[in-house]
Length: 115
Length: 204
Image (cartoon, rainbow over all chains, first blue to last red):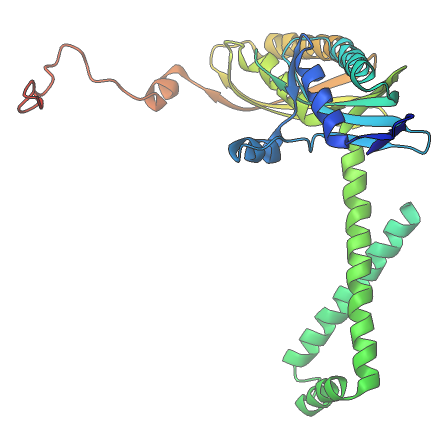
């Protein structure tokens, strides 16, 4: 949970919100299928719930965010390039929507689909 | 880390050996039944012994979970290919690389089945392929072509310059006859299909 104080009070942004923003940002990147689902994700989908297990959000003392994201890429894409685009897309989306600083975005390519 | 692993392995060897010895002693009647019953009764009734036995149980569970975490953590750590860029770390799981190799080779006309296994160590990336081939293939030419293709594509797609060592094991060669036998046979079209009784008399 990230806290930002202003004159009127405190604004708290839950980690689930950051995970949801991350998920959307990842799905918009070319060459990337989306967040890695796995068995757990498929089960969540079946139950009609959102799976944020593949996205880990950590906040340090300086209110900086560290993200670990597991993704699935399309067959044939250059993985380092796709991962870099994912990192940029997540950074843009979170900074645009929350004004929070991002320290690290670790991308874990778990699966290759299509082809 | 290696020190703790060694201690863990020694500990489990010792505990399991003791357990095995006790079981053997019990079955060979080296341990008298009276002694066993006395031991069990005293550890069940004596408060001091109960505490000692209980604490031993807790300690065993603690050591087991720590040891399991140590081993599993190490396996998880080794199951990725990782590199860093200014925004953070990018790691590619080996199952994804196996997917990639599978897709690269499965569409080749000479290949009937393929099962890849990818290992990474200090020497580089090792791809082990078990292939079921269709007959009438020049194996040296084919394997060389596959090795070069996988090496090039894996280095290109992962963006790594590490050496990719591709080992191919042809596990089976299937002849065309075998393949035809396995395919489901369709009934010949010139044979008359049996007529369905009351066909065309659907419900209104």
